[in-house]
Length: 127
Image (cartoon, rainbow, N blue to C red; front, top):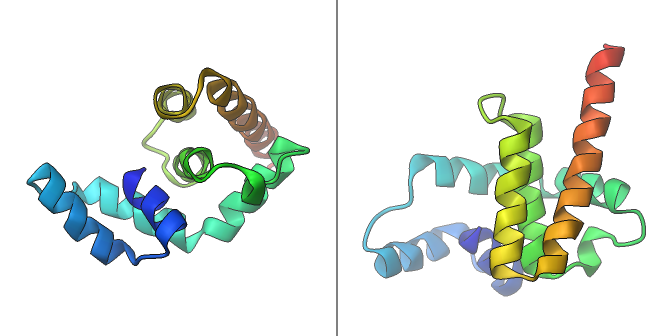
């Protein structure tokens, strides 16, 4: 989340940000971190379109960078990672939003992710 947020705000490349994070935390980010960051960045437009569709009157580009990136990570996990239960992605995203943003952000994140999960389940049933 930190790397994606910093990239969004500063425009610095993830490799530069990984180096800073390694110095701060005194270890390399886990391979899962690399996979999520690269996956989110590769699919940012697709993830933002999903946010836009589910958030109704609050498009991704108008959201605070932290909330936007929490949503991007969760949506990436929900749509691309079969090994992570959807409910876990939603719960973790809501907890991050409450911890680092505001209590209201937790409700926003929960609502958007729940709509995306419902749509994804409906799509699975149609197939």
